[in-house]
Length: 418
Image (cartoon, rainbow, N blue to C red; front, side, top):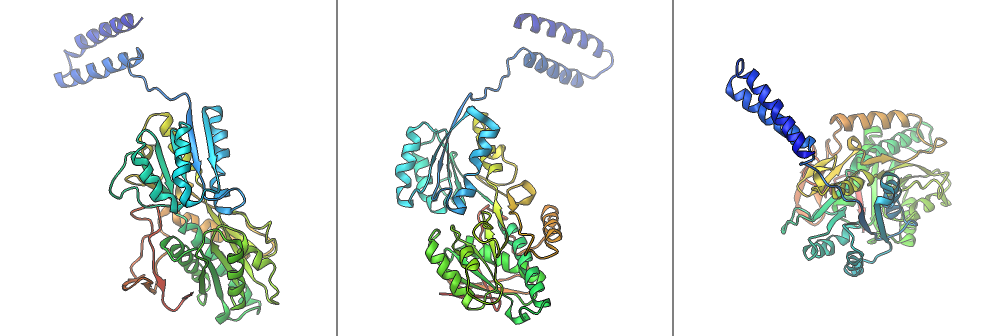
């Protein structure tokens, strides 16, 4: 059959050459010949891309479905099942302590995983080291920034949603709510305090709460923020107690970059006589705080993870299949690429212009006109007082990597409590 196809092809090529010799220069004839030959060889099945019949995927998670961060991360399991069905075999390991990462990675490798996704920043060092000795497995580390550091490994990648976009919109909604409270006489302008419960004093948390505050100040010029850290990613009691402390200091709207619903519960159960509200992160917390949670934002991990799996199926480089901002072995994306989503909103307490704020902001992000870290502000890095930023010149977050890099405390509008 192959011989017959090639003979037919050669015969047609010869006829084409006889005709074209009379009217076309030699260069064009040569080009036509190359195209025709490739076409006939392709139809003969000589160029075939072999897809894998099945792929084994491993997940290494710091929490489980009971914690907002890991619950949001593991939503991708359903997306994979819907998209690929039985073609994908999955192994999920949850509630893994950081000092047990090596052991669990070894377990997933023994299960013949083709690709392993890890979801905690603190797994990054272990995962990259493990990848060195397992070049036949692809490793994708979320929320980390060491993929492009030396040594550069072909099988180690990092990825993260550009969540500062979601925080900025959440901040605008909080600012609009403060404006309504000021207009209704519930608070004075100088009482427009936001509170933020953070895990650690590091760029991810600092970028999040700064984007949140700057979004709020776009709507409410008098908004300021108090920040307090728990020094843990997942400590329900500490988060709840820290939130209660901020509420007692006069914060009206609280948010968090931590992994439990402790902050939402503190807002819902407060004994304060004035109204307080909550903005969530990663997971809809209206079940825990139906009278106080307004909305929130989350990273949608499915666009990256499904694309990475697709690359493995096609025996291709992961970054060649990802729709997002590519930085070497690192990838990120915001609303434009579907990596960031807003959570549902509570219609009974959301500001009246909520939908307008969301649609306007997302459009600005998509067309590149929304400047988040920008304005008449200066900030200082907490660990290096000589490291100062002036936001009159826009600070472009995630310009060179997917993980946040903003690490300044804005003067006059942010108070960090030790």
